[in-house]
Image (cartoon, rainbow, N blue to C red; front, side, top):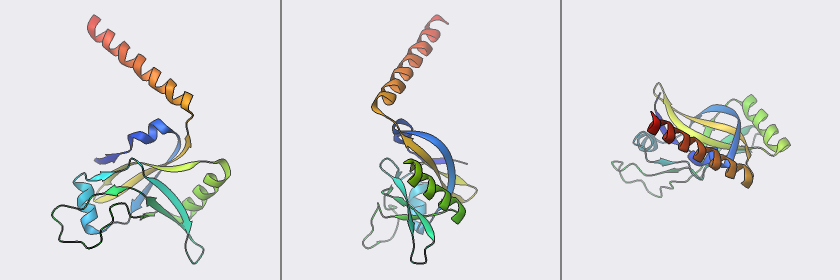
Length: 154
């Protein structure tokens, strides 16, 4: 299992409550681009919608996958198009209820390979307040100083 992209901003902006694994529907040249590392999850999020039959579906929105440089000419390629996620209907209904009920959101954490498939790890998360972010930065600085002190003193 190799990690291809990480959303570092998600752990700073959100408190992760629960994690889920989903497959992603991609075109062939997009798969090659993701495996080459041409993906950015920084401003991406997951949206839950219902289709015409009333069945719930999950989509990855605003994830930037650059065009694979060796791909033949692809007309009208949109690098930030919506990409369908493969989750079970029971999971999607649960996530839909949680996101409406408690004001939680779904954020992508990372894209990785599992055997030969690309998977997306998404999280049910709660937004952090500004003072929580400051506390995290303060804690990180203190940990860094403690490691540096221990390294100097031996």
